[in-house]
Length: 223
Image 1 (cartoon, rainbow, N blue to C red):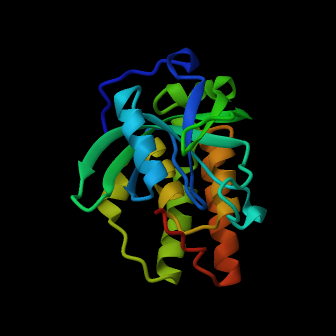
Image 2: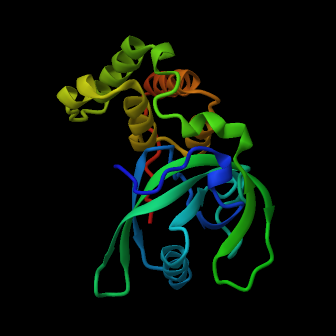
Image 3: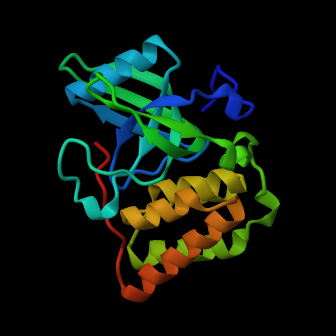
């Protein structure tokens, strides 16, 4: 999904961002995440984002926190997303789509009066995120597609193979990483992979582990 705004590097992104903690969530640069927003604090967050830079930080709670409390501890790396689609439902919900901009390192959570959490973040470790399709030539596409075929067959999944065959490597790796029903730790490992090549390798490794276990991953509801 194309964006009107252009983000050429870390200096184009805000150092303080609102946080949307979501267990099992994975947003990657140039990936798209649809969200059904209904909690009042996150409705307020979307309102403020629309008034300002239209940017929201997606981040997971620590896996061992069990989501307990209003402010569970957070993992150290998340992804900045820009609101690229927005609709009101008429029943106090927003339907939005975030398009990933860049990963960030959580530097410091701030003490704020807003109902939603905010943090100071740093993007410098993820400068590669601002370059579309960086490292595509290093991806083992054959191995990735083979792993996907095995996973789809084992779990009786219907795959649009025409779209798979036509997708560029970055879009394929990131879409599969975001869509596959893996657990929070696996999703975080995919997020933190230092390059597209490494992300593809992590994705294949996780898929092979799930196949060996005879499982289909861990379903996660992003709401």
